[in-house]
Image 1 (cartoon, one colour):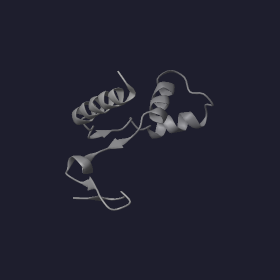
Image 2: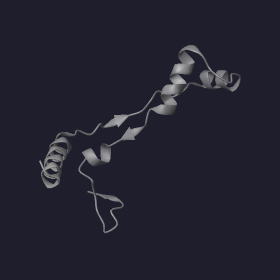
Image 3: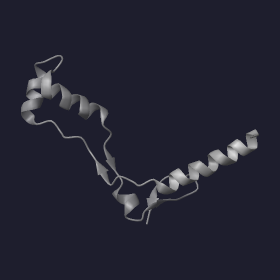
Length: 84
């Protein structure tokens, strides 16, 4: 298969993947409680469940796609902003 054939195959596969992608409406890690924050203020490296919860909070992206799922779409010449 030549390079143009491989490119066409790749683009076709990418189109299938994009068409099947579903947006997650919301994803947000659990916030720390006041008591957990107080505990963290006294510990350089938290251990156990608190350490795990902190790691999850710092590495899990907060996602909110409610605007996109509600019908908003990107517009404008520069591609910035959302409209219905």
